[in-house]
Amino acid sequence: MENRSHFDGGLLSYVGWIILGSLITSCTFGICYPWALCMIYGWKINHTVIEGRRLKFNGTAVGLFGNWIKWLLLIVVTFGIYGFWVHIKLEQW
Figure (spheres, rainbow, N blue to C red):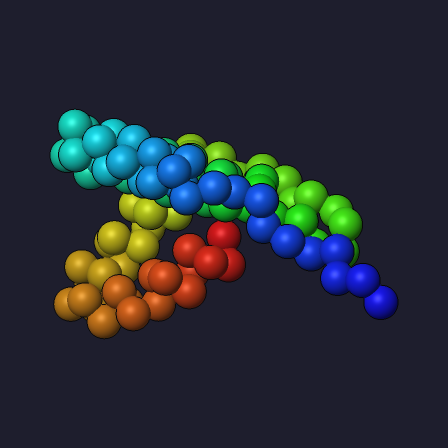
């Protein structure tokens, strides 16, 4: 059986998105970090093909921003302990 799953993104394109995301985050002092994450996640997911079907990213920065505020508050309330779960929550989002 032929493996029809692959990733068709290029290194230079990925580096460009990372630099753009870093610039956006730096210029806004971290406020637009959810937008940068959505750009990078969107690029990764939109360039992934599994079983011959291209994945499509449909997340929004506004939706992530609301979760991001909630997660930051939980990190503050738990004195940083919740920070260990933020990466997992981000993947679930």
